[in-house]
Length: 447
Ligand code: BG6
Image 1: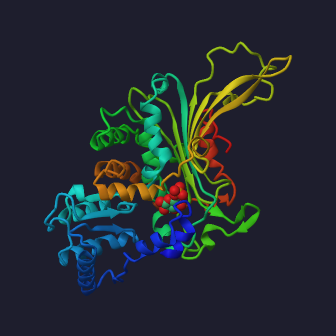
Image 2 (image 1 turned 90 degrees about the vertical axis):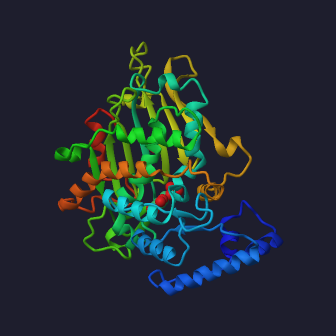
């Protein structure tokens, strides 16, 4: 832990004395997940800690094992009396944090929920989605609801399309066994991407109350138009990377990664075209894509506004803008790595001729604030300790996301004609993902 803190928490820069004091409070108790006797040892270790730290009943159990192990852990914790409902302070302590994916489909999600509810009260359960802990994600609410200028434009009348991109240059980084079970849909889309969708599309909540916010996000998922399974390639694309180059270095294809089946049908890329059937978003396409081993590591939400209704400038003025997508005002919320917000405007290029140019008005967190940004997990673990669940997923949101995506995952599962691998590492995903937008006269932003 000392090494890890020194390596990864450089911005905190603790003094040697602080670090030693902190480290002295850590202890480790190995547990074989299936062995009930080990949980008795764990209970004893917790009791000893409570005495030495002078604490009583303030446990947080954090499940970040492969999801298939959650069930025996919950059962065994309960069997040795560490469950939530048995606690003397059952309204608040202990707490249990559950890493995503929460289940692997709607049915297993409900089973996990039922099992958790047998042992813990709902307000002791924290379904973690680390995207909600990111500063830039929390700022979406502030941008939308603490500024009056966006709301009048934030609807089908002014917005042409919205693109939510999560692109990673990383591969599966030694997590092949886990990833084979998950795939991009379960690993990223069902949770992180849908949370971003909820934030950008929801109505203004009545207050900052955690239930009010989570109600509004759930309504977004309820209004999603079901995907047309008979015509899936028009609305949902999957891909898997083959060998290629990242930053000039050759990297292996997904099927060559350790822990991965040589004939794996697991997707490492997903692109979706979604519609939210409500008054605000009637017929505005939301394009969502997430993929590993893409050309650049970047996560952003781009809100592309309508073109001007009548062009008074002619083609010569628009010199170089042969693709009309390039001239649309676009508000980009960059989640990472270069956290910030930018607004693309058309301006006149200085000179004696009238040539237009697209320019970005930029706000960068790094430049605007000198202070350190807490990492997503730092914020979420603190909120969990304080009992604030606003930035955690609520059960109905998780259920709704599975209910929406299950049919697509099942359809992909039964269809073995995927021609995987279908994109090179270092590219921008399969060609079919471009067609998804081209059919609508749109194209992915060049990142
Ligand atoms: C995790 C996924 O939840 O999020 C990983 O399991 C992914 O596969 C990671 O790489 C991305 O997180 P971030 O914060 O780097 O965008």
